[in-house]
Length: 236
Image (cartoon, rainbow, N blue to C red; front, side, top):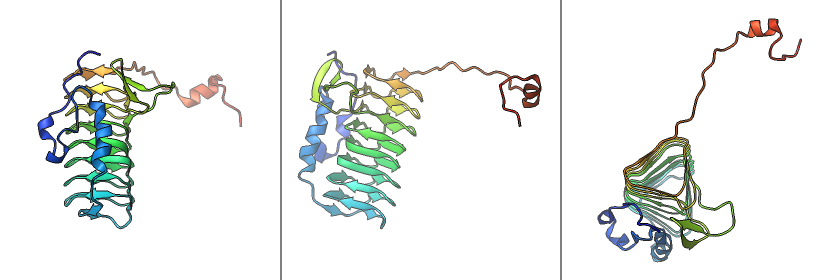
């Protein structure tokens, strides 16, 4: 495998998370997260809406918030300023750094969200590592399971993981309804156009463009179409 693109500013990690991410093999953050979550206290110091459902050990720091009808299945560590929005779901082990957000009808499963990462609307983030200040547009999906049998590789190197979603560097922005294939790595500061399907390793500070060809034609007059017998419409 060639060298991975620049991904994270590790100096921004909370002190308790130092050592979480190996720049050469960032997917190992998921197994290291499991070890980190094994030692968290079950404490709800932040704000929890009365309609939210919480199961298992969850550390909700002061200043963090779980909104209405959210479902949080521990273990989960939700740091100060982080938000779990309306009808959002966390499961399988989740780390949310300061000011991270999992918003309306979005799901984070076995994932690391670094500080400021935004997963705001109708997103799926599975077995993924999301960098600082990343933003996912509405409907973005980070797929984590190959259609074909076998484990997920990154840049041609086997990770040993059956499930692995995307690894997104700091400041990445993904347009609405894009889909990232399992094991996709996107370097920091890169922009992905809406609706794109992305796989493989994408360099830092790039733009991934999708330019579908659109055709605009004249709209036919319904009365003229009916009179001329075009369109095969049924008679009354």
